[in-house]
Every structure is written in structure tokens, then in C-alpha cells.
Image 1 (cartoon, rainbow, N blue to C red):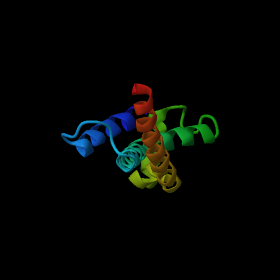
Image 2 (cartoon, rainbow, N blue to C red; image 1 turned 45 degrees about the horizontal axis):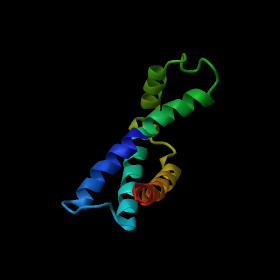
Image 3 (cartoon, rainbow, N blue to C red; image 1 turned 135 degrees about the vertical axis):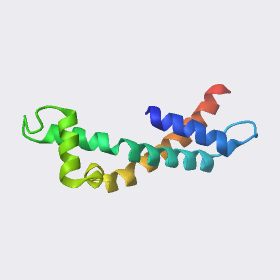
Image 4 (cartoon, rainbow, N blue to C red; image 1 turned 90 degrees about the vertical axis):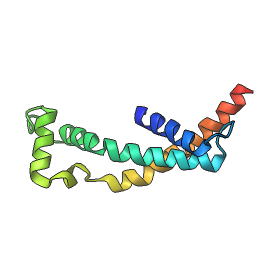
Length: 112
């Protein structure tokens, strides 16, 4: 969440430039999409380790996040940390595009 909001905030500053006011719907959706894409790419390795630790037999990785990470890297390299990212890249950026567009729209309504 922090990654998404920080990325969105910085992207919206770039898009807005010196213009006053909020972003247009398409602009906020584009910034939200990019923020979702970036956050999905950055957090995928953490989620892959977490999912492996939750779904495997107890003790497989000695209940250590680092041991799980090391084993995934040994078995499949960096690509192993990004296993399953396809569906996530289809879902997260679209969710964030919609979320931030609505965030901008309803934020303006509340401010008025």
C-alpha cells in the first residue's frame, strides 16, 4: 500500500506539472495503473516466499524466511521469485487504476 501511494503521488506530480487542481480521470487511471504495476513487480518476490512457506509441509524451510528465499534462488534463480506474476500483473494494475481514479474523484467531492 505504501509503495502504491508513494508511486502514485510522485507520478501524479509529474503528470500535473505546474497545473493547479487534480488529475483528469484518465490521468489518475494511468498513474494508478503504473503504481500498481510497479508495486506488483517489487513485492512479487516477498509474496512468492510467503506463499511457499504457507503452502509447503511444516519444517520444509525450517520455518525461516531466509532459508525459503535461499532455496528458491538455488532451485530456480531470480525467475523462481517471479513465478505466478502473470495473473498478478493482469489484476493489480487494473485494480489500482480504478481505485486511484475513484480516490481522486471522491476526494474532490469531499473537499467541496
